Image 1 (cartoon, one colour):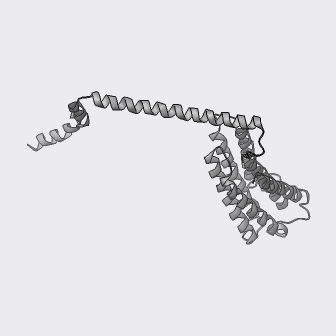
Image 2 (cartoon, helix red, strand yellow; image 1 turned 30 degrees about the vertical axis):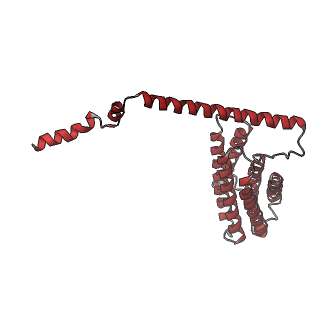
Image 3 (tube, one colour; image 1 turned 120 degrees about the vertical axis):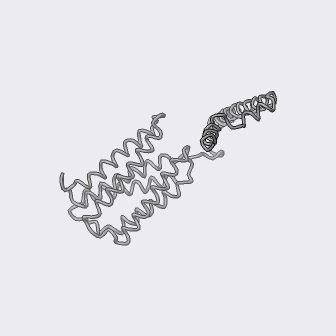
Length: 244
């Protein structure tokens, strides 16, 4: 699955570069079907990679949302619902801007760790947001042709797909693992089991302590603890006195 996502990401980058380099002879309508098909394939692969090996289940949820959004956008492109050259950059810009916000959200979720995934999501998220917002201000700034704007969106989304591919963990089969790798994996599993056992023992001790406290506490005190507090009866008593 990682290899397929890498291939799709490379195709997006190639398509983006081609649109940027050949903007004088390439229009969006002339390549709309190919781009839409590419979007749909990327969306399907994104949804399929939802069940791939990942350390974070929240990250998997973001991936399937991105995949579904990409598929729907590809379907709209193939259906010629984005036939206007003026609307295409705005729709794609909004799409990659939202994708950038999602990447920034993922980065914030990993802010306490600040590993390579954090910086990857942070950088790609910023690039997405900046590129997406630029689509709305193109007429006020550089006034780039539609072909270049579409190429930028494709190029940026190619980076997004590469990031998705990187987050897929490749699990090696036991048949191709070396002895050192097998020992390392076994040691990791032992450590995880040890931590789980320590947590279970802690919970067990707390439960036993609670049982002992209940056993040693007289029954009348337990009933008093469950009885309503005097402050709870004051409003009722006050209202009764007023009625008298």
